[in-house]
Image 1 (cartoon, rainbow, N blue to C red):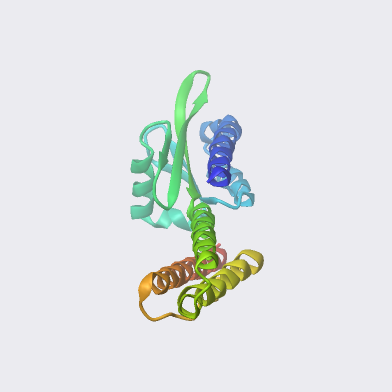
Image 2 (image 1 turned 60 degrees about the vertical axis):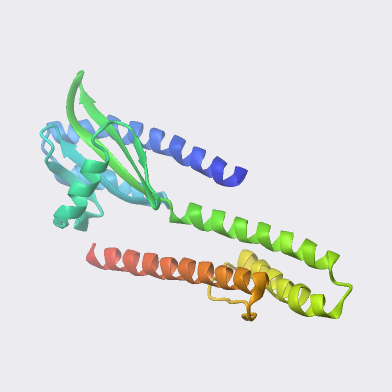
Length: 219
């Protein structure tokens, strides 16, 4: 949990620094009516692995530049990001965080910078941590009850298989792995829930890869 908290704090700090640096430069692109230069400035944010989108709005609220550029054609997405950051603050959602800051020139507010961060990698790490913690708890319980064959067959062995898959997932980052299902019982429910979680993470990863590939192809 502390690692997730530390990464969230780091993201908040990165966002603050990012907005300060980009905002310090972006005002000139608005003053000189240079959207291509503003687009190149936003494109520099692609090096941050969690940046999903970045937008610069004029003082009148109209879109001036965007990253990726294809977002400009998605009016609904632009409106959603603009509405999510109407205040100069950070808005945290289940799968993303939207941060906003004013763009100021000579004490005059000439625009607004909005950056959206992808939080799915953070949630994925947290989910894996919870799964490993639960696995350890059940392994400890199974070790205490392994004196009978029935306990060994219904708890210890399935938990050991679960622990092996968790270890492989943590070491190899393979979310296509699954634990062999066990019929009924709390262990079976745990394995089913763990397999479901792995399936959701795998689907999200594939969707992110597909989305990034699509954006790269469009750019």
